[in-house]
Length: 105
Image (cartoon, rainbow, N blue to C red):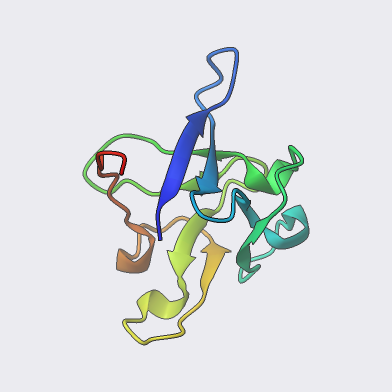
C-alpha cells in the first residue's frame, strides 16, 4: 500500500496522507481525542483527524494535529491484523515511522 503525502497550504507544516489506490485520506475515526481511536481511510473532506505533522529526527512519528497523539500499531505488535490507532506519544517502537521516496510507476 502506498500513501502520497501532501503538504497543506500556507506553510503550516502539516500534511494530509492519501492512499494512492483509493484516493482516500488517513484519518482518526470521528477526529477523536481518545487513546485507541482507530486510524482508517475516509473521504478527504478536510476533517481535523486527517491533518498530520511529522517532526524530524531519529524517532519520527506521525502526530495527529488536532489531538496531539501519535499514530501507532496497537501494542507495537508484529502480528497480522494488528490495528493502527492513535495513542499518547511516548515514542514506543510501534509509533516510529520512516518516510521513503519511491519513484512513481
